Image 1: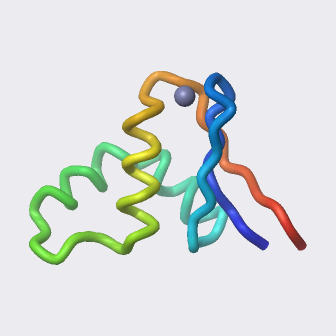
Image 2: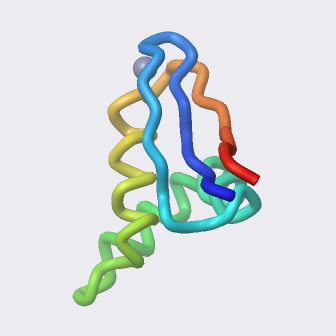
Length: 70
Ligand SMILES: [Zn+2]
């Protein structure tokens, strides 16, 4: 099963290499994770970087966690 984010306003979706639960966690703690990211020299896992970038782009929009496949 694949999981990702979808913006209900732009109808844009992104699929990420992680689970639905992780994506919900990231969405709820976006501001905390962003702070942590700022202090890391190595960067976060790529799904976190990509997920954060998507959430930033759709700030204030209605973003839902979606899944596809089995
Ligand atoms: Zn949007």
